[in-house]
Amino acid sequence: MATKRQEKFSRMVQKELAGIFQLHGHSWFSNNIVSITKVEMSPDLSLAKVYLSFLMKEGKKEAFDRLNHNKSEIRKYLGNQIRKAVRKIPEIAFFLDEGAEHAEKMDEIFRNLHIPPEDTDNSEE
Image (cartoon, rainbow, N blue to C red; front, side):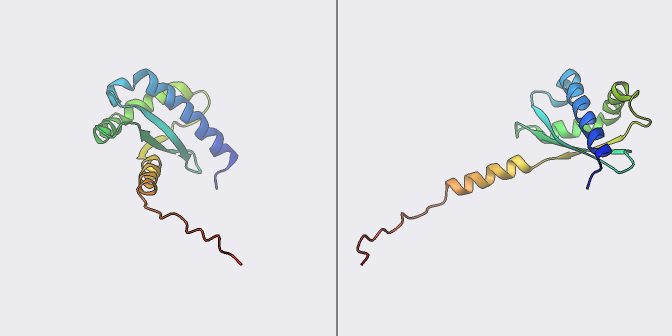
């Protein structure tokens, strides 16, 4: 369970990373839209686990790889934004959040289910 300090720090990192992605993300994501679904901080605040969700399925792997390749540049931008609020800039680890895709698959399964109509007998006595 995360402490209030971790939660506060994760919200700050999420907000700042969203701003960084808006300003500089066009080169990392090309035409893909990315959202930060969650940020989890380690207890010592030295590691930020950033969960990302991509809107388009095409090019998601390439965009994620480019993002991981530019991790040090992103950390530098993050450090410039939060350096007065923290002692140490956290390392960043990116993860794909597959929750939306899983929900979409489940919706598709439910839509394709064939459920026969309920047999209504009005001959109850």
